[in-house]
Image 1 (cartoon, helix red, strand yellow):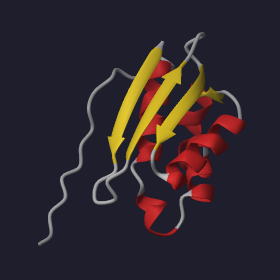
Image 2 (tube, rainbow, N blue to C red):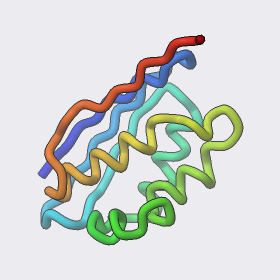
Image 3 (cartoon, rainbow, N blue to C red):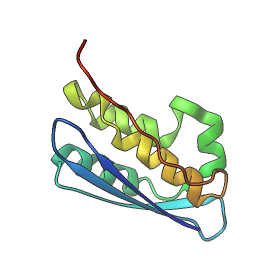
Length: 110
């Protein structure tokens, strides 16, 4: 199965496109494109780790490959980047463990 997630980063203005694909409904490969240098480095580091086992990743939670890689690469203000969540959601859809559904955040100052 294939999945595409497009993340609009918010105030930074960067968009990240995440393509996830699984041929066996478990092991997922990624292609990640972004004008953001840090999001690109995150994508490159994730891809360098090879296929991600979607089932193991769900069980590992924040200690899985996707979110561990995000913590290693996305520091400072980028630590709250939405791209890793997009990767995780794309992985779930590609592995067939979740249906595609939009996720949104609305930001206002109070």
